[in-house]
Amino acid sequence: MKNSKVITTGFTKENFKQWLGTKKIGFLAGINRPITSSQVTILAKSIDLIGVQRTLVIAEISFITGKKEWYIIDGQHLYHALMRNGQDIPYVVVEIKDKADLVEKIALLNASSKTWTTQDYITAWGSLKTDYVKLNEYLNRYDLEKSFTASVLMNFSHDGSHINKHIKSGTFEIINEEGNVKILDYVTDLLKIIPRQNRVENRYVCREFLNFIKSCPDYNHERFIANMIKVKDQFKFATQQEGRLSDFFYKLK
Image (cartoon, rainbow, N blue to C red; front, top):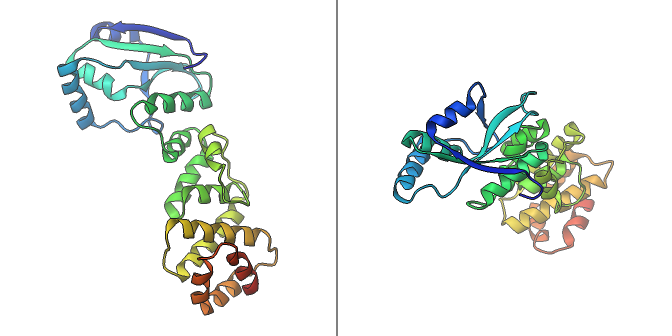
């Protein structure tokens, strides 16, 4: 963890409680994965057999509740397993500068066991930023690729190939929410006309349709869909050939 102050130490179960005293140690619900008792049981058994292979990572953070409090940012299951076993609690303290630093460090810590997915970042940032909560809601509502849905909500006019960088860095924001949600509805209507195709073909259709709408200020959705239904067989054929779909859309507007 570059540029982080790290203090390594370890306490017995009793000393850990004494060290905490009146301090409250919290868990980052909504950022870290939920704690499951079955996983704690598995980890407790593993510790009995091969000992502790990792340490808790804790940090003092003020931007979550507005006052400085201690949080376990990695090792929630380990903490409960050690408390259950009555064993020493090794830990390190890391410095967390801000929200972005917190998410980045949690992602790096989890990468050693399981690389974080785009959804993990959305979930983590969702506990800190409202736009990520909304993004997650729209991802549940629309059966579209995450990158496409996010790119539409962020008002990107392309296929959103760089949207994951915004999601991971915490810079994703929803722009013109009402107008762009309407576009997601339009895309959903379009994909109802023909059966779902393979991932690549659906991505191509969504991308071309988005670019078409963005460049067509007089777009009339009801008329377009009515015309599309009449030529749906030709539409399916057009999706098979790169470059034909854009012209096909313009003929129907």
